[in-house]
Image (cartoon, rainbow, N blue to C red; front, side, top):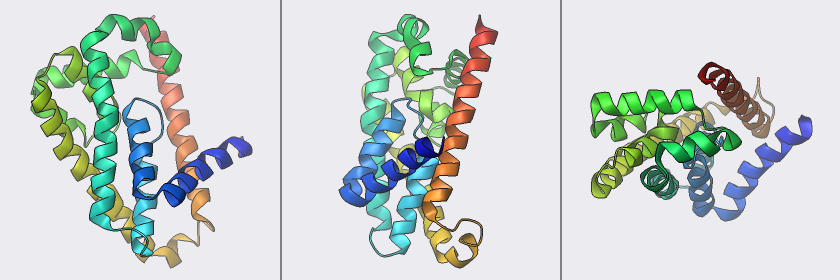
Length: 206
């Protein structure tokens, strides 16, 4: 387990440190394609680098937004051309939760097109809202517009939180002697919750 945690924490840190803004975009694109690599970890760390003077707040938000849009683009077309049958058949192999997708589709049906924007600001829902938009055949330009707006706002907020963590680093380091320890803990909690929900909901679905 220690080796796995070390791998994930160093993967995020090294990707961002070595690739800069493009690394942020790559990580966000991975997370947007329903892979449990949480933006709640990527962006605060990037905000920490903003605080340290290595990054610019708005550039981080911009690249994070574009990376997320890239991943969401593929999810959207997966929904259009694959639809429900593809998810039902292969979703279990990549930990796509039917329960979460069901809830996201209901959310989309209830709130309509604006759900694409609002969904970018909601944990779990944001991972599936692009699929739901594709399955519902939302017009492409509307999907792009709402995704850009919501993803940029989300990225700006979480990066700003990272900046504030940096400003209070003397307090934070009392509990986490290294930032990679914090990243490792957050990652394992996010992945464990994601897998637990998937197994639980799969059993309920069956």
